[in-house]
Image 1 (cartoon, rainbow, N blue to C red):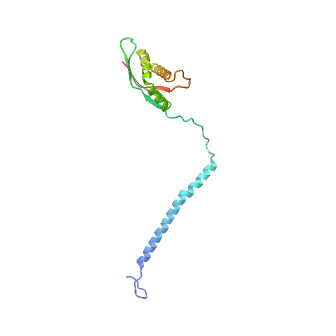
Image 2: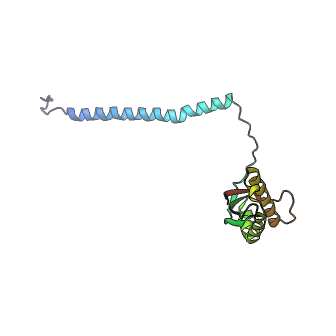
Image 3: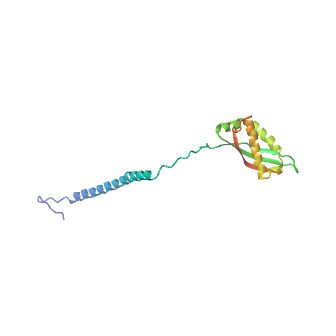
Length: 173
């Protein structure tokens, strides 16, 4: 049973135990927060200072940052090819790469004239010449040259709005 004091009242042991437990929990919490704070703030600063002293800063290379290219998709072409051994036609889908959105808008502005130039160019081709990889690559260069002539008539050598012609579909029948 509970011990009695001189006045005969029981001794409050429960309150003493609660105070001891709260004190221990508070000390543990302060210790954990202190260690965590030290690791977060104190430890990283020293490591960074030592690394900065030991290793010289890397030299930065000047990089030419090129903006992401802009692609303009042209409606598919279907043209009759030059007769070789019967009737053949070409169905072709093209996307062109330009350097920026201004050139992309220029391509869209001149689209009727560009499509006409490409149709005339395609209709003058032989099916056998388009069957090889080299023939397709040569056709892409011709299309690019014709498009740039329309977009920049008499333009300088460096003034080429269309930098690449990409075939997204190429069917000869």
